[in-house]
Length: 114
Length: 114
Image (cartoon, rainbow over all chains, first blue to last red; front, side):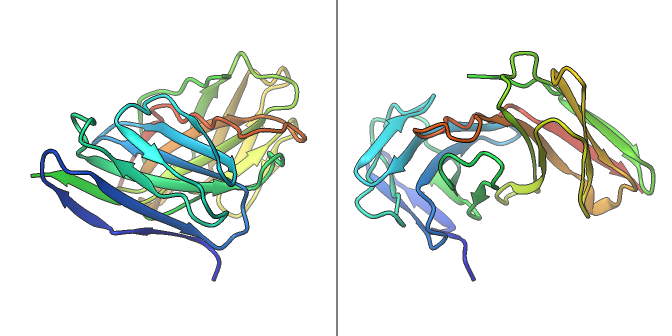
């Protein structure tokens, strides 16, 4: 079945460490997105990408980095510069340029700093 | 970026209709109105979308004001499984090139009483 796979579901990070969250989609979508969600809050956009080797900062990009080396993959690295990284992270994808189409989300990844 | 405004929370009773409002006064002529909902610790799922005319599907109905500055998501007979956070977002129109900076607001937390 087509969809978006995020891994790991749960991740613990020590302070000062970088961690990478994986996001893979087999929907052949051009656009991919990363959101952060804090408990009881809405989604905030971290980064988004429309094409391989290109991506743009969202509203809260500081302390995060991404890459888009393959169409189906959009990993997010939470760096040590992100001072408060504990949150729920969501990856999404969509067809580019056709706004009537659905946005698909992964199941999310919980990151906790210990 | 075009923004939407929703009430923080709403409450309804099981088997009664629910009307969830969304204001989007800065909507442009080709923006689509999308609704998603999110259960705890899950990624958002698609509910419905529309451009100008009212829309119906198996999950809900979408009523769009004539001036398109507001819309209402209608759940005809709420069940306990409809308890979720509902997000109303705008997507730039067909043919818009470049990644769409999809911005989710705080959403409306819907509580269903048995």
